[in-house]
Length: 227
Image 1 (cartoon, rainbow, N blue to C red):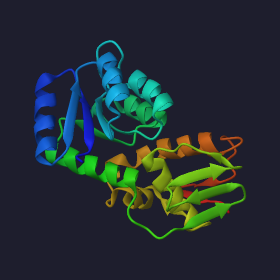
Image 2: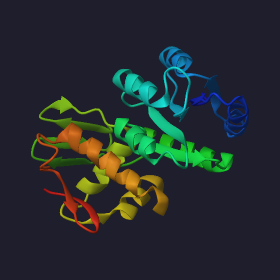
Image 3: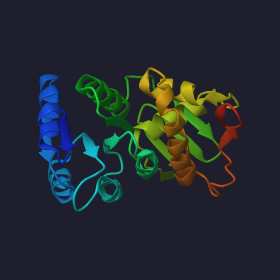
Image 4: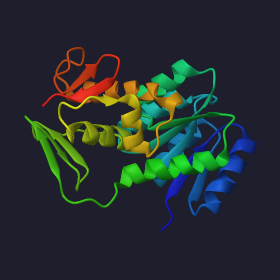
């Protein structure tokens, strides 16, 4: 069965173009032109991924992300943003978006990013491997993370970043290293997004995110997992 992609943008021409490219790539495409409509569609259809413009009438993309994340924490989200909206991009990532594409964009690049995020969400076939540190347990086979016996809901990107860090405790990973581990290629312009994802991980995993026990900062380099 074809995977479902929800495209949300108030610019009809963008919706048409993106829909055409995604359908050609084999996806089933749902559309919405405002945040309220997008919430209805997402709740009813349970898409695999949302391509989301941040600048929407009524309920904007950030508020949509807040609401849908509370209901569907593992739903993959790719944001569409203007090049000048850096703060909105960072806030969107901190709310749980997996990736972003800036306008104007290449539809082919967007399709490639949709495929990459969906691969992360599904997980590549991998041997059953469990990584543990204290009460923190990451199960690659089940794609689950538990802390103190409780399930921790992570986005696909957050899961892959944590798996990469936990796979080599003590190793300093640069932001480019971490991007390459989740996207397959390092995009220099997107390295700052790693900081937003790490901030989310610390908020979900650490007792005191300001003084992290698990994910340490390596100044001038990036991050490492403290075993």
